[in-house]
Image 1: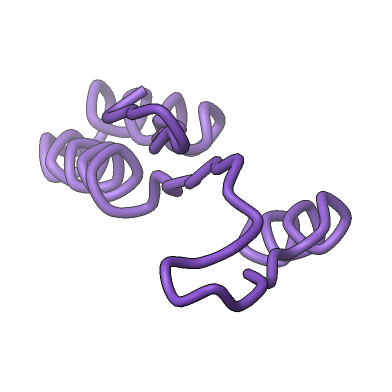
Image 2: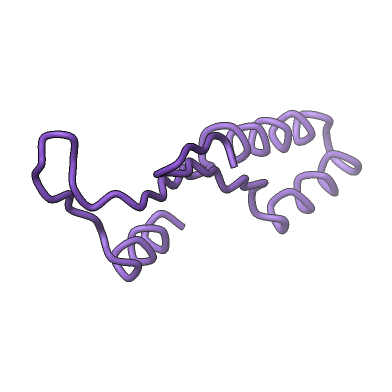
Length: 85
């Protein structure tokens, strides 16, 4: 959880990257070249810092100006998340 107030919560799911890719890079770093260690580190940093999704959860149904707020259903959110993966 990053931030929360009375009517919303902002959360971030941390991703660490694909474990198989990291294991292969580490094995190649030990046997072939240390360059693969830097590739593994860059992949981990990208996954952890930039590819981790943010989710905003709110209980509000009406905006500040009185109009109804539109939200994605859980199915829409899961379909978008699966499309990213």
